[in-house]
Amino acid sequence: MADLPELAASLTAALHDAGIAVGPDRTRSFARALTLLPPSTTRELRHCALATLVSDPEQIAAFDAVFREVFGGPADRGAQRGQPGDPARSLPNTAPGRVPGARRTTAAGCAREPDAEPREAPVPLAASPLDRLATRDFADLSAEELARLSEVMRTLVLRTPTRPSRRRRTAHSGARIDVRRTLSTSRRTGGYPLRLRHFELRVRPRDLIVLCDISGSMEPYARAMLQLIYCAARAARAEVFTFATRLTRLTPALRRTGPDDALARAGRAAPDWSGGTRIAQCLAEFNERFGRRGMAHGAVVVIISDGWDTGTSADLATHMARLSRVAHRVVWVNPRTASPRYRPLVAGMAAALPYCDAVVSAHNLAALNDFTAALSAPRRRR
Image (cartoon, rainbow, N blue to C red; front, side, top):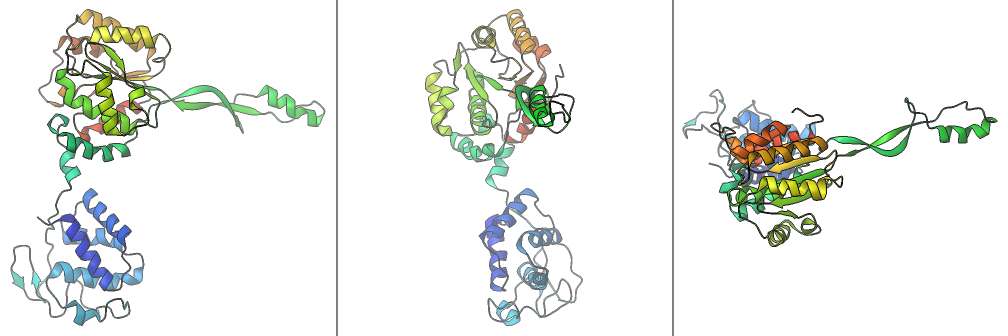
């Protein structure tokens, strides 16, 4: 299997020798395009390289000649294009898909004559390490692999729905009339309001509250989800709590520090890491200490847990109903739902399910799209 950096470097080096200005930025764009849309034939590879490496239509002839030479078989480039760096001495015009005096080599390794009809050959590409990690379960990743995913998590944006604010801003039209500004400007016309002034309410994103289960059964997923919240929740006003046998507010520990230090400080701040699970008791504490103060009013609440609870299901249903009445949306993240054989038979999950607006797995990097879509949904779907 061909190495992706070696493939991009060999083609760009040959184009640079042919007099085509190909810098590191175009090489990086070509490699990224190969990662996002892996070509399966040489035709698709040519389109990908042409879109990222060529900036002038006059360079297409020289580009095609170099492309045929690199991927069509061995040839003497120096004898065909002249000195390096001279764009006027490009390869002579030939029939499309052929190089004079060169023998074409198929994917099977058999040489054929130049006059033979060209065929499309598959182009093997090596998958990047991030592509291989994207479909792996967070529970199977090591600490080094999770740290490698932090760069991708920084590119994600956790957006919450917007809500109207009490602050106003000037509008050119609308149903709301700004009486104060209208009367103020009417002084210029003798007290007659010849022109009405309008306003509209500003909008701001809803607050994001994360309650993450750090019990023994959720420890691998908890570290990945806390890393995601730290890396991607900067655009939203996020409050982070952990719970196992007690509720711990981690928002101060996750501020103004790197992801590794933040997770280490979070581990020291939560003494019940990898302990038992008391979801109902911790949820009751959150409602009493923070929910009644207005933190959860109109916010998007994310609960990350597999639903295992040592308390009674009736208590959990009571506190979930209380939380759902003040929150805008309740999104439950349960990595166990990724299995096609999963059924909500756990007492805690069965009790909480009627009060959830969305249940997602978010068990790997590829499944985070469902998680971000559940956060940004504008309405309840309970």
